[in-house]
Length: 138
Image 1 (tube, helix red, strand yellow):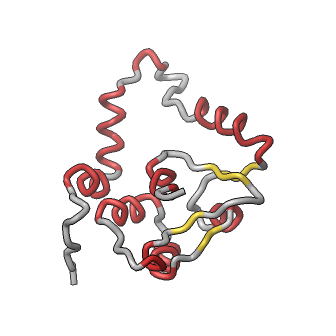
Image 2: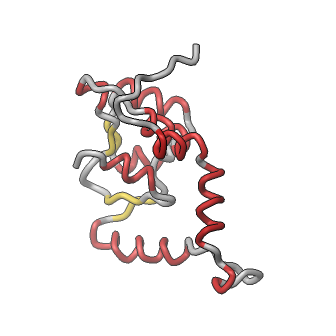
């Protein structure tokens, strides 16, 4: 599926089924450039420079096992367990604790937290245009 990795990196938690499929930045293989938004999102969510280099510049395909060991995804499960495990992960990821029940959860505040965590990716995705030329920082 086109843009599958982009959609996955946009998520807070990433899971993948075992035994089938792969993740890839295919732009180099396809002769395309990486958009500023996708580049910033990739750098924000994949913190290992070696993975960015081999993934983006070499268009490496990552199986679920490789993606897990390289911290591109958080978990891998067989297809039979995927839905149940995804549901558990979503419920366990809700921002609540003994001190702060969900009654005090603020979607606006949560959005602001995520915007601060991923500021460069947020700005590039919100305000950048696909046709914008890349800016060299060298």
